[in-house]
Amino acid sequence: MRALDLDYMLGLVPVILGYVPLTLFMAVVAMACALVLASLLAVERVVRVPGLDWLVVLFISFFRGTPLLVQLFLFYYGLPQVIGFLTQINGVTAAIMGLTLHFSAYMAEAIRAAITGVDRSQWEAAQSIGMTQGQMMRRIVLPQAARIAAPTLVNYFIDMIKGTSLAFTLGVTEMMGATQKEASGSFLYFEAFLVVAILYWIIVETLNQGQKQLETHLNKAYAR
Image (tube, rainbow, N blue to C red; front, side, top):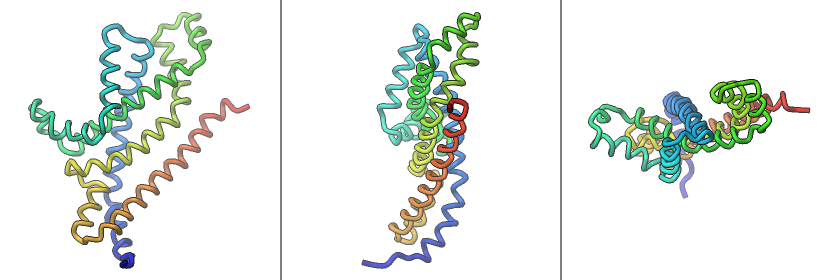
């Protein structure tokens, strides 16, 4: 059994850290897009627009029921063969699209549950003063649902950051892609993947601490 090459591992840290901004960029953009899409899907699932509900159910079922890697390959390798303009998208764009659609399906269900978790008296009070359904959602229901859904949404963002590691299969050189290239050149696979695992771990634990502080802040107004 050989000893770990600590010098190689230490030298690899700054190399991989150089790709952290790209990893976070993909995750943040995908999270922002997924949050908007998931909110629209969740509201539709609550109000149930005739003729649209079955499409939303189908969308959520498909993206929850198929692996993220398959979806990424579908967007990057499959769809360009049938939709010509998609041949212009690069790996980063395809990864963001895949992450957005995949996680929006999960987030939609979390937001829907949060919306239905708002006390019915809040809905009735809004209706009693003449609010339209749109006003009620914007001013009363969604702000309260956001507090309920926030911890779950942060968890999905953490999963999204880890999901960006699949972007290297589309030729994107992010943290995982850079590690793969370095490991292929040095043949020190264990050291290389151990370093990137620790860096992902540090990022996730940092976000976990932020999540705890967010929960404390959001619950202050409801503390007795």
